[in-house]
Structures are given as C-alpha cells and as structure tokens.
Amino acid sequence: MEKIIDENKQGNQLVLDPLKSNTKKLFIESYGCQMNFSDSEIVASILADNGYNTTTNLEDADLVLVNTCSIRDKAEQTVRKRLEKYNAVKRQSNPKMKVGVLGCMAERLKSKFLEEEKIVDLVVGPDAYKDLPNLLSEVEDGRNAVNVILSKDETYGDISPVRLQSNGVTAFVSITRGCDNMCTFCVVPFTRGRERSRDPQSILSEVNDLANKGFKEITLLGQNVDSYLWYGGGLKKDFDKASEMEQVTATNFAALLTLVAEAQPKMRVRFSTSNPQDMKMDVVKTIAKHQNICNYIHLPVQSGSTRILKEMNRQHTREEYMALIDNIRQIIPDCAISQDIITGFPTETEEDHQDTLSLMDYVKYDFGFMFKYSERPGTTASRKLKDDVSEETKKRRLQEIVDLQQKHSAFRTKQFLGKTLEVLIEKTSKKNEDEWSGRTPQNTVTVFPKENYKIGDFVLVKITDCTSATLIGEAVGYS
Image 1 (cartoon, helix red, strand yellow):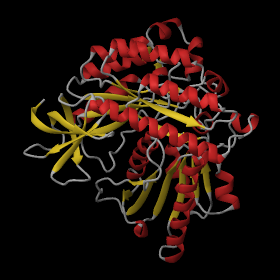
Image 2 (image 1 turned 60 degrees about the vertical axis):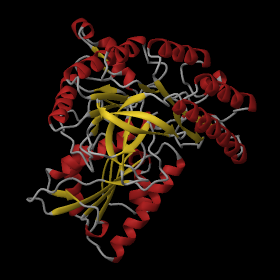
Image 3 (image 1 turned 90 degrees about the vertical axis):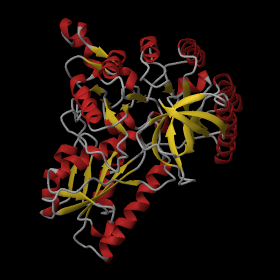
C-alpha cells in the first residue's frame, strides 16, 4: 500500500503554466495516494499536447477530471460528493462541460457511473491515459466513452510529466505500476493490474531533467518499489521466462537507487512504498552508502498479529517484520520508519489488537497512517471473510493506535533536541508567515525563522523545541 494523502482534506486542484496556443480548459483534482497525483501530471501532459490548459476555476472548465481512489469506502464517498458538485455546476452554468473519472474507481464502477447513474461522460482507467484524446473525440460526438483495459507493459516512461502546482523543489518519479502481492483487503491489483517496471534509462532521464530544472529532491514511486525489476520490459512475474542475458543484466531496486543517487549526488532521493516481504538488505545498505538517499523508510505492517497477517496474505510474520526492523536499525541507526496499520480486520480479536500495540511499542515508529478496516468489493476479504468487528470496537481500537503513535512520534522528535540537522526548505510555514517549513532526511517537518534563506536552500538548523509532529529550530548556516 502506498503512503496515503489525508482524504479529509480537499483534493488538490492541479495547474500548470498555460500554453498560448491552447484554447480549452481542464480542471483536474486528485485524491488518494501519491501515485494518483503523479498520474494526474501525466494526464495533464497528454492533454496539454491536445489543446488543454489547466484552470482552478471549475465554472470555466471545458473538461473536469477527478483522479480517484478506491482503497477505502471513505475515499469513494468523497469522490461521489465532488461528482455531485461538478454536475451541479454543469447544470447551472456550463452545460457544455464534460465530466470524467480517472484512476481506481474508474475500473471498479465504470458501468454504474456511465449507464446506471449517468453522472459522467467518460471513464478512464490507470493504464489508458494515452487514449484520452480518442475518448474525448467520442464524447464530442455525443457518445459516452470508456477505456479501463489493464496493460501488461504501459509505464508512461515516454511521457514527460508536467509538474502541477509545483514548488520547484520536490517531485515524484514513477518507477513501477501495478502490484502482484494480492493482499486480501486491497483493490490495487484489480484496479492497476500486474506489476511491471519502467526502463531505468527513462527514469534517469527524468531525474536528470528535474535536476537541470532546479529540483532538489525526488521520490521514486510505486505500489511496491522494492520489487522493481527491469529486464527489458514485461511483467515481473514473467522474469523467469526472460533470456539468460536479460536475467544477468537485470536492474533491481538497489541497483536503480545506486544509479539515481550517483547520477545526481546533490539531489535528495526518497522512495515509497516498501513492502516488508520484498525489502532486501542490499537496499538498506545502499541507503547507508549514499549520503543523498534519505534515512527514511515507509514500511507498512498492517497488523502486529501473525494470525491476522496470514488472513491478510501479507507473506511475512510478526517476528520476520521485527527482525527486518532490527537489521535496518543496525545498518542505519538514525533511520526514521513509518507505518500503515489497519485495525478491525475481519476476525481480529482483542489479543490480535494487543499484538499490534506491542509491536508499535517495539518499533516506536516516527509517524504513521492508521485506518479502520472497510470492506472493498471484489477483494478476497470481502468474498471470504465476514466483516465481524463492530464499528464501535473499530473506533476504539483505532483511537488507541493513534494515541500510542502520538506518544511514539513525540519520543522520536525529542531525540533531535539540541542536534543540528539538514533541512530542505519547501514552503512558508502554514502557522507563521515569518518562518520556513522544510523536511529533514528523516522526513520530519521542521520550521525556523526565514532570515535571508529561500525555498530550495539546504539549511543547517539547530533544533531547540518540538511537538509530536514538528521540529522547531534556528538556522545556523547553509548545508
């Protein structure tokens, strides 16, 4: 599972610098994971070549697209409310507006949206964005349009994404698509297809281009970055069928990290998301070897109970996960680690819940993303397991997990008091216009007085105070 953007917040309206030759206006919003936001940049790039500039004014849009998330029911309900708003604007002030759904909900609810509810004009799955110009032609001719066919080889490696609402400092670079892990709670394999990796040379080209444009940090993205494997193209599951030469010269994730880190030694490198069953020590050693690869790993555990992990088809036990944590701490002592946890999974007992809390006590995560289980139609869990944990119990267990994580986050931030850390300035602090906000290599948000520094500077900051989520300090010079 990827790192999840807070879905309680408004979805991001994405905008790029207008092209004077373009006459049509695109309004695009993204919800859910970082991959969706990255995909929206690909979509905007494709449509920019077909006459569209982006706009933040919904009423002016010729085309409205929402890039959707199906990972939890709450995400789907958020998108439905947005579709209601789009259609209200369409009825009231812009009857020529076309409305479309992209992403994971597109595949799952295509018939419902187009034929039953008739609330959209087009539905486009994650592997079909290059077909958007053709689909829009169908819509202009008065027909509904749909393409949700999953691809075995599409990686969009030949598309140069626009950087929407960019701060000019950080950017996402997609390296894999799809997932083969088949966790029983997850819709990703059904909505994004089988796992395939992108040509490392196209990744390096994109990273080098970002560096030339002044970006200071990139995040390599995938549903499961640790399983990155390039052997000339094709699905990961077909690697055994590759030629001997392709297998010998294949590039795995550790090798890709090395290529990226050495190509741009002054650029910070992050990655997300890792899967415990696929993370190997060569990746951890590569992080330790290169100063510009950030000492931070997002390592979803989902549950601290081996029994529940088996029900989830997570392919690792509690003990194996803890051993992985021990190895990471031994090789990178100051590595920050964050989590995803699902509480209230079917059959979860109080003992299972206590196992999760005790594992959290063992790891003491820097921060995390915690959710109540919500049944997703089409998953193995929805077909074979009864959602038998009451809503009241889910809420209580989730609150206990959140409270414990806050305690651990405070413990972790306090470890930085009195230390001097490198911070990359990303923006003005939300709470104080006279302060900058940036992140440390451990991904901890840090604020400090602006003085004469600017966005994109690497600054050494002495930490003088902290909350459970934020470091507070004073700049002592450039890094």
